[in-house]
Length: 301
Image 1 (spheres, one colour):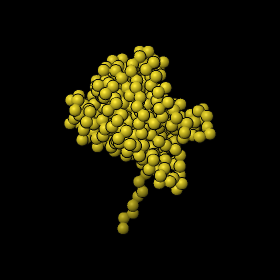
Image 2 (cartoon, rainbow, N blue to C red):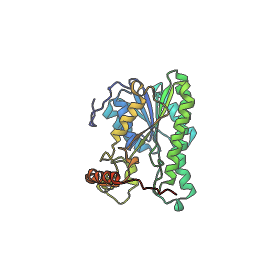
Image 3 (cartoon, rainbow, N blue to C red):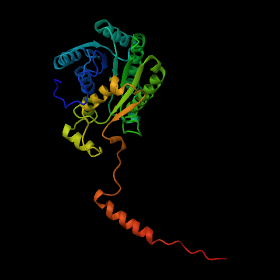
């Protein structure tokens, strides 16, 4: 497989003949997802976003690196009509749509008390409303084809508890995860599988940079890695492999309604109460004290 990425565990024809639409596919995680879908056999992809020059360059690069057709369509996912136009464009140019990856997102740091209602609504509209708009637009095409299809919604782990200064994004990602389950339930009868991917901190992506203003990549990595049990930041390739798994009929063909967390166990992290090197010694001491305990004698009245 002609790629500078790490070796893939999947067959190069795992997605043979399929056509994908990827929102947010012009950069970051979704650029890599698009690339890997094409490298794993997809016949064509259409990337969507709001900046035409940006999309044009990304599509040309993706076509070059994959040897496949990558087209682009300017689309603001907040606009339902624009989403319908994007799906119609993909269908007219490629003849089918088998995969939709909803990756368009907006985010910024803000204390809730300083977050304007407009700012909150903007993130909800791009992330949650946009995911629904694109899914709603692609549904008739996938259902009518008789083949069904696969929808993958990109969320995060922000709402698996709470995250500082992310009330807007946490609410939006929670809504996406809920929508993933609802659509999987309702659309399964049409052979449409709907799943999600919840990435953890991903190195060298616009999202990580935007959420750590004023810091270098090395600074960001040092701050975050200590909270990741696997000891490293994730990569866009990690997320792309999850997308290949979920969109492939062979590996993910019976998976629907699930949100796959790909974060190195970061969301589970809590600092250890006892340093690792002291665990055995303290355990012995606690056991010894426990054995030394005797029940108190109760005097008879």
